[in-house]
Length: 137
Image 1 (cartoon, rainbow, N blue to C red):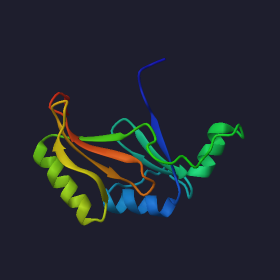
Image 2: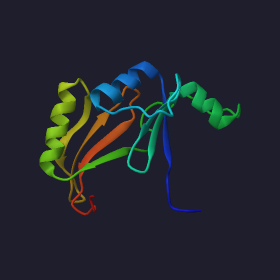
Image 3: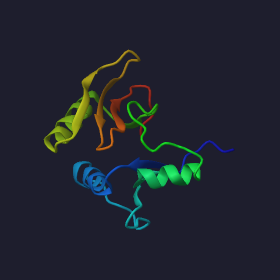
Protein backbone atom coordinates (compact mmCIF):
# COMPACT_ATOMS: atom_id res chain seq x y z
CA UNK A 1 0.00 0.00 0.00
CA UNK A 2 1.39 3.41 -0.96
CA UNK A 3 1.84 6.10 1.71
CA UNK A 4 -0.88 8.56 0.78
CA UNK A 5 -4.28 9.88 1.73
CA UNK A 6 -6.62 11.15 -0.96
CA UNK A 7 -9.78 12.21 0.91
CA UNK A 8 -10.67 13.08 4.45
CA UNK A 9 -14.46 12.96 4.73
CA UNK A 10 -16.12 14.54 7.74
CA UNK A 11 -19.57 13.37 8.73
CA UNK A 12 -21.50 16.54 9.52
CA UNK A 13 -24.79 17.16 11.32
CA UNK A 14 -25.84 20.20 9.30
CA UNK A 15 -24.41 20.45 5.79
CA UNK A 16 -25.38 24.14 5.48
CA UNK A 17 -23.67 25.10 8.75
CA UNK A 18 -20.55 23.25 7.61
CA UNK A 19 -20.64 24.91 4.19
CA UNK A 20 -20.88 28.28 5.94
CA UNK A 21 -17.94 27.41 8.19
CA UNK A 22 -15.57 26.22 5.47
CA UNK A 23 -16.59 28.73 2.79
CA UNK A 24 -17.25 31.85 4.86
CA UNK A 25 -15.01 31.39 7.91
CA UNK A 26 -12.05 29.69 6.20
CA UNK A 27 -12.70 31.32 2.83
CA UNK A 28 -12.36 28.05 0.90
CA UNK A 29 -13.98 27.41 -2.49
CA UNK A 30 -15.78 24.15 -3.18
CA UNK A 31 -14.67 21.91 -6.00
CA UNK A 32 -16.70 21.09 -9.10
CA UNK A 33 -16.83 17.54 -7.69
CA UNK A 34 -19.37 18.77 -5.14
CA UNK A 35 -23.05 17.91 -5.26
CA UNK A 36 -26.04 18.83 -3.07
CA UNK A 37 -25.07 16.48 -0.24
CA UNK A 38 -21.32 15.99 -0.83
CA UNK A 39 -19.21 19.10 -0.57
CA UNK A 40 -15.58 18.76 -1.68
CA UNK A 41 -12.69 21.16 -1.17
CA UNK A 42 -9.57 20.54 -3.23
CA UNK A 43 -6.49 21.11 -1.12
CA UNK A 44 -2.83 20.70 -2.06
CA UNK A 45 -2.73 17.02 -3.02
CA UNK A 46 -5.67 16.11 -0.78
CA UNK A 47 -9.44 16.55 -0.69
CA UNK A 48 -11.61 17.43 2.29
CA UNK A 49 -15.19 16.27 1.87
CA UNK A 50 -18.29 17.05 3.95
CA UNK A 51 -21.11 14.51 3.95
CA UNK A 52 -24.18 14.05 6.19
CA UNK A 53 -23.10 12.13 9.31
CA UNK A 54 -25.90 9.53 9.28
CA UNK A 55 -25.34 8.78 5.59
CA UNK A 56 -21.59 8.44 6.15
CA UNK A 57 -22.12 6.08 9.10
CA UNK A 58 -24.51 4.02 6.97
CA UNK A 59 -22.02 3.91 4.11
CA UNK A 60 -19.17 2.88 6.42
CA UNK A 61 -21.18 0.27 8.29
CA UNK A 62 -23.43 -1.03 5.56
CA UNK A 63 -25.98 -1.56 8.35
CA UNK A 64 -23.40 -3.25 10.60
CA UNK A 65 -24.18 -1.06 13.60
CA UNK A 66 -21.74 1.85 13.39
CA UNK A 67 -23.23 4.60 15.56
CA UNK A 68 -23.37 8.03 13.92
CA UNK A 69 -23.70 9.72 17.33
CA UNK A 70 -19.93 9.86 18.08
CA UNK A 71 -19.64 12.32 20.98
CA UNK A 72 -16.60 13.91 22.59
CA UNK A 73 -13.05 13.56 21.34
CA UNK A 74 -13.03 11.60 18.11
CA UNK A 75 -9.44 10.41 18.32
CA UNK A 76 -8.08 12.61 15.52
CA UNK A 77 -7.37 16.20 14.64
CA UNK A 78 -6.73 17.99 11.37
CA UNK A 79 -3.70 20.26 11.30
CA UNK A 80 -3.22 23.46 9.35
CA UNK A 81 0.43 24.44 9.60
CA UNK A 82 1.68 27.96 9.01
CA UNK A 83 5.16 29.42 8.64
CA UNK A 84 5.54 31.41 11.89
CA UNK A 85 4.27 31.97 15.42
CA UNK A 86 2.90 35.34 14.30
CA UNK A 87 0.93 33.68 11.51
CA UNK A 88 -0.78 31.42 14.10
CA UNK A 89 -1.76 34.47 16.15
CA UNK A 90 -2.93 36.40 13.08
CA UNK A 91 -5.02 33.52 11.71
CA UNK A 92 -6.67 32.82 15.07
CA UNK A 93 -7.54 36.54 15.36
CA UNK A 94 -9.18 36.46 11.91
CA UNK A 95 -11.08 33.25 12.68
CA UNK A 96 -12.28 34.66 16.03
CA UNK A 97 -13.55 37.76 14.23
CA UNK A 98 -15.58 35.44 12.00
CA UNK A 99 -17.18 33.72 14.98
CA UNK A 100 -15.09 30.53 14.97
CA UNK A 101 -14.96 28.74 18.36
CA UNK A 102 -11.39 28.68 19.72
CA UNK A 103 -10.97 25.54 21.82
CA UNK A 104 -7.38 26.30 22.91
CA UNK A 105 -5.73 29.71 22.67
CA UNK A 106 -2.37 29.92 20.86
CA UNK A 107 0.54 28.86 23.04
CA UNK A 108 3.99 27.29 23.04
CA UNK A 109 3.72 23.50 23.18
CA UNK A 110 5.89 20.78 24.70
CA UNK A 111 7.26 19.53 21.37
CA UNK A 112 8.80 22.91 20.50
CA UNK A 113 6.10 24.41 18.34
CA UNK A 114 3.27 26.86 18.84
CA UNK A 115 -0.37 25.96 18.34
CA UNK A 116 -4.04 26.60 18.91
CA UNK A 117 -7.17 24.51 18.38
CA UNK A 118 -10.49 25.52 16.85
CA UNK A 119 -13.69 23.51 16.42
CA UNK A 120 -15.90 23.31 13.37
CA UNK A 121 -19.71 23.17 13.74
CA UNK A 122 -19.54 19.41 14.47
CA UNK A 123 -16.71 19.66 17.00
CA UNK A 124 -14.02 18.35 14.66
CA UNK A 125 -10.78 19.80 15.94
CA UNK A 126 -8.44 21.78 13.74
CA UNK A 127 -4.96 22.51 15.08
CA UNK A 128 -3.55 25.78 13.76
CA UNK A 129 0.18 25.35 14.31
CA UNK A 130 3.68 26.52 13.65
CA UNK A 131 6.01 23.53 13.59
CA UNK A 132 9.66 24.60 13.38
CA UNK A 133 10.62 21.06 12.29
CA UNK A 134 8.22 20.84 9.36
CA UNK A 135 9.47 21.48 5.85
CA UNK A 136 7.17 24.07 4.27
CA UNK A 137 6.67 24.82 0.59
